[in-house]
Length: 255
Ligand code: MN
Image (tube, rainbow, N blue to C red; front, side, top):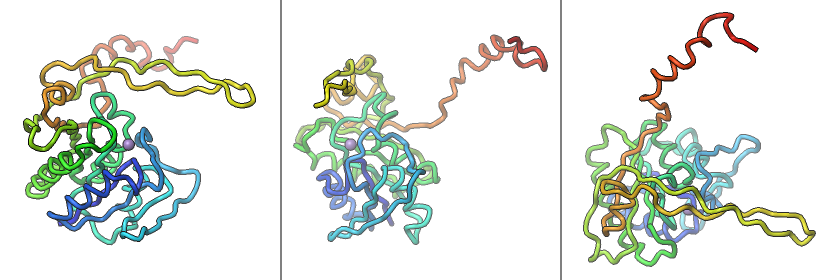
């Protein structure tokens, strides 16, 4: 079995190195990761310049691009095999609820999913890698299961609380919760007096009801969520067809 491993924190990140070591116990692992930290890169692909692939002393490949670039290049020309599983992480910090929209960690896994492969994004909820070994253990257990029964090829988001392995209460399969809007932008002045803007931190949990990833983490469980990519608001389709019915008739558009 072969695993393609990526991340968004860059090829030097402790989370990547630890997960590589863990996954190597169950499969042959190939790393293709960003050269630099690309957290919050979402699903961006680099289309305005060529990309280069380098090989580190430990064999990890790294790309001067985004997380999605890494997996995209790996699957469309760099690798001479099709992996059985794509894994991304372990990320330095949570990817809960709305975080998944912005996350480069989730995006790297999403790229694998878009190519029809089972894919898993892994995040350690607190920054700082304190209990990284626990996140790796859970990720390896989930990956082993996905390798055993890969069909259907789904996209999974796994968050692990920052607790010692012995204190982890288990894994719950849950839906995504939601966050409050992010904190306000912070305005400063650059050395020439021009205003500069720092995007504010993520909001706290808004929907953290039982059954959400936020709730599972708060209770000491790892949170595993199957994700889908269809952004269509299916319940509103009929109402929108009614509302915009006039626009559907040829020649009816009013200026
Ligand atoms: Mn990150």
